[in-house]
Image (cartoon, rainbow, N blue to C red):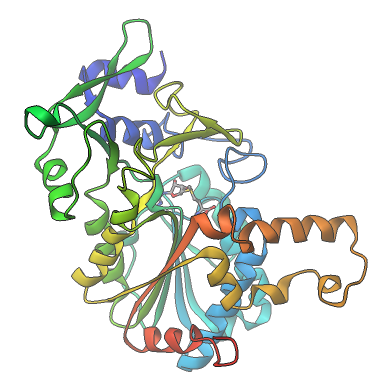
Length: 378
Ligand SMILES: C[S@@+](CC[C@H](N)C(=O)[O-])C[C@H]1O[C@@H](n2cnc3c(N)ncnc32)[C@H](O)[C@@H]1O
């Protein structure tokens, strides 16, 4: 029997959040934690594309931004990637920095829960410290750049709906139980924890009768912990799918929530089927990350579509040179251009993925100067 199904059967019934935790992070069978010998989850040969795995312009643009920050601050930085996967972003960033790495970075840290992935990062990215938890690493000295791409949308969510609103407000939670045939099925029940009930109230949200929503009450505290680790002088860039709560929980836009599975670049609607073999994800409520910044004494930050962020920070200079002078492109250059367009154009990833930039201290001031377009472009 599938180890996740066996664990749910042993427990009898679990909240969807517990199920998602098992499906993604079960020590031996979880989608991100099970041992892998072939390709990993992100990338063309995997189940989904992320910004860093879609095009190398992402890593190059970030490298240039980090370099400019180090120059502006007059000292090298600590660069931390949370949820680093197999190290695609880090290896691209370090390759782009090349010899300049010594002046730009005094410490490079990759944090990743998957042991198989940590081994790949260590092999791929020389001179990078690799850890399974940020809080187990030593505190940084000097300015920090914290980066996370699609980390928070891979954290478990509680799934809720409202039933029988006419008979009084009834928030109901989705649970998962064995179906008696070796698989799993949905079942409904009262909210599993007080924070499931309080979350919507605290965000000033009322769901409509029958509206389904995913909530991640733990995200705020987790993000605040990450920010506090950075100290007094830092910038964080969080790349993720999501919206602020007003948009995320708008019944007209997302009446059925945002929970989906991915396998081989195809949408999987039944997220309970084949746990451990399917990526499961739900949009991030960016209010949680902004509230976390307030909790940690950081600036709440600014959220921009990915294409806007990359263009502002010079991504167009990394397009194949022939694009600017109208020269014919080689087949490889056409491929590079097509991949870059995915990230830059205001359709798909370029607008669906958001970049939340937050910060504190001198590093944040330095970033704000870099992020302000000159008057001619504004
Ligand atoms: C959707 S993948 C994104 C990988 C990579 N950042 C990218 O954009 O290609 C999410 C990654 O976050 C990792 N992860 C999830 N929770 C984590 C945590 N608490 N600490 C560190 N890594 C985590 C997962 O193992 C997985 O590799």
